[in-house]
Amino acid sequence: MNLTEALLKADVASVTEEATKDYEIPRLTKKFQTPFILHLQEIPPKRVAEIQSLAFEMDGKGKLSQGDLYAMNMLYVCEGVTNPEFADKEVLKHFKAATKKDLLAKLLNAGELSDASGEVQKLSGFDDGEDQEDKVKN
Image (tube, rainbow, N blue to C red):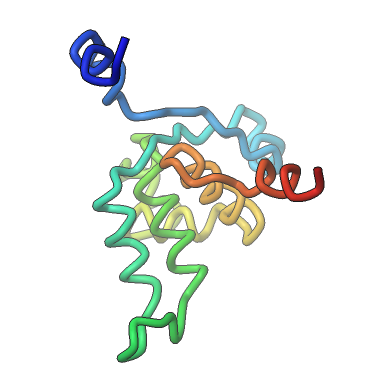
């Protein structure tokens, strides 16, 4: 079978379905005494590019000149987390947060934010680098 035949036989819905994953934050599970699960989903390529352009600045030569990793991680998490609880008006009011972003900034510590962002990036097709390191070692 060649690529054209494979493409024509493919189930379009399953091939284009966005990847999802449940991701637990153990520290918050302990604090809230209930599983604190983030429902994560893949971010489409165009939106990933927008997030990157919002978080990083390029110089006149097209090279990276400055970046805000916190902003990038927060945007990935805000975009990738689908839990409706984080947009609930009563929850936002209780935590004195105006937006989902404000709430997540209050709830997640730096490591949790970075880890959750990494999980969203993996769902969005970014390699975590472990396979490359293993190939280089061998």
